[in-house]
Amino acid sequence: MVRTPWRYCNYQHAYNITPFIGSEINQSLCKQKFLRIILKKEKAMNNIMNAKVYVSTYYKYASGSLAGKWLTLSKFECKKDFLAACERLHKNERDPEFMFQDYDNLPESFIDEGYISDEIWQVVNELNTYDVKRREAFAEWCEAKGYEQDLESLKEFRTIKINKSSLPHEYLLQEEYANIWASDKRMQQYCMKDISNCVLTSFGGLVVFEKQKIDTKFCFGYSDCGQGQSYEDAQKTENNFGAASFLKANLKDMDEVLQLFSGLDEYGNETYKKLYFTPKYYGSKKIMHFVFLTPGRAIDPDVTRFYPGGLIEASVEDFKKCYQAQKEERTKFEKRLKSYLKKYGTSKLKTWTYWVDE
Image 1 (cartoon, rainbow, N blue to C red):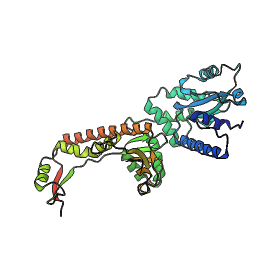
Image 2 (cartoon, rainbow, N blue to C red):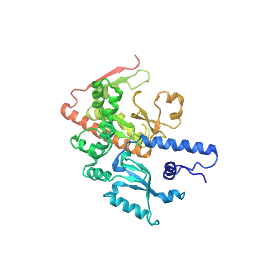
Image 3 (cartoon, rainbow, N blue to C red):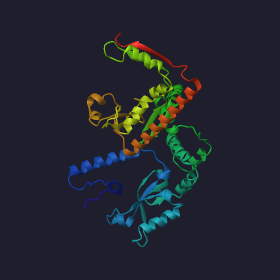
Image 4 (cartoon, rainbow, N blue to C red):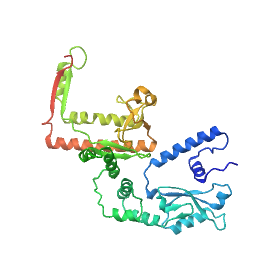
């Protein structure tokens, strides 16, 4: 029997990777798959509230067994409760010596192969007193600062006030824009002010939704040779352009995107386009926007050359997050448009016709 390192064995167990036992080719292929999973996994941001540990025993490992289980630490009130659960898990051993073969979302100083710190539960228990937004803000603040999610970091974080209207994932965005525009504070501030919403993807990307601009200028073309509506129709459209038309015109692009999320194109027909993420800036691989493409076009060199940062197909989870964010943005924008109409009506709108054939 070929023995593999325990850390690899555990990923093999957790991610259903075929063991690389056998030919050198199979070993190589499996190792590549393993590395891709690890790299993808390490891109995601740590959050101690999601910390988990794979618990086995030294006896089982010495016997060539990978038997064990992932335990989520936040489900236990203290280290004593966690160790009791470990004993129940390995009750087939008389005096089990626990082996923590792998872990997720934990600082390295909190855990080793045969050790786990009770500070984990001190941090988790305090975070449980926070609301969800503040808990997420703590994880992102630590990520942006390069801090571990420990008691020392919590002590400093207690002094920070979180604005209720602050952006989702604001700390991560600030850090990334500081990397892009390192010597230009004004540009950093401009970029932050231009963002209305943000989705953190499963691979650590930050998908930004920019604030929509209210369009107050509308023109209507007419043609004498069939390239558009007639002069009379264009005049009629302009004269009848009111509040409802203003709302519809401003929301048109957002509604078309929502249709793509629901699987329909702009004409209401079924579409086979999928959601992809691509970097928004050359200087950042984290800040992203999304596009809808058919799978064939997503690998077409004539298309992909317009996305030099590459394309990442959205997972089901990330698709749902972006769909929800897009719906929220539409709701917010419609509210702004109605507020504009309440304040100004249609008095500040500029409309005109033009000759398409010119």
